[in-house]
Image 1 (tube, rainbow, N blue to C red):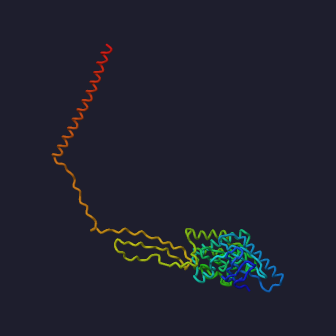
Image 2: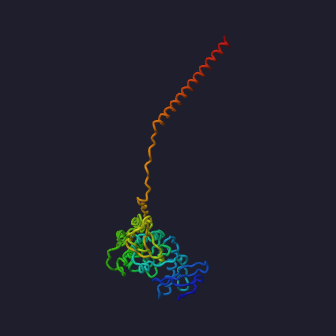
Image 3: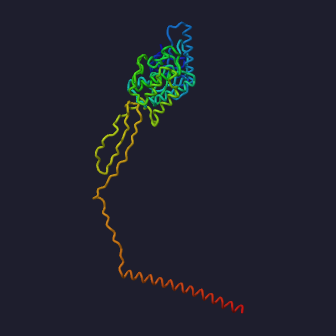
Length: 376
């Protein structure tokens, strides 16, 4: 049995348990070679197997860990290493402060359809990348989805068989013995999103009950019903599923999760009465868009839009009265003097013109006389 302080693979020191799944305990560990904090867990191996079968199980776990290490996606947990230690196989992963989706739903209730659609886009995009690498997730369910404290979404146990999928999220063909496939992952994603908005799995905890019609899925209903079809050939691909979920969130690009560790946002009515204000001291009112399904700690962003206050109207008694301006009217004497001045100005102008013309004529006559004296 592993305990705190134990060294795995002569490299990883187990510090404290941070989670538990069907496959065992997830530990917070320290990489003594690279000096970084990691998450590490012992991979599930069946007990009581003959030596040859046990060796085959260990080899298969090693191959699954190596395949998971090839996945590079923002919404997928990064696998750093997979290593044997005695009779065990350990998986070393990046450490992300987070909590499991199943824990979150148990503590805070179901999500709104818009939140679930956003979650489905993140998970579906990661799943499409996984499928393009030729890997099937096998065990997609709320227990393998992490809601990080920074608001991101992380998918874990990629391609890891472990203890097998939970019956409530297992595709019907897999339950009948068919191998896991990309279509089975689509079913598991649909069952996970259904649980997120309805609070219970679509076919009960055993996966064998009649399908429960969705009551809170809203615009997500059609997409969920397609993903949960019994015939795997009739289900949409993961890329088509992401496209459909993006259409549901069209116009709500800011839809996102608030980190689970953040304080809960208050749920307020769409409008509220504004108390009477004193004159000349206006106070803006605030309108907050109502939530369809209030979900503490994980809500659509609440947009507060302050309204510009109406300008204060001053009282009429405080407005200064404008006195009419008297129109200037000249006296008869003033008019006569002005007329005389204008006449004098016109006479002076005429005299200046006459003198100018006379000077020009004199100059012409003088020029003619001088020319006659010189050339006669």
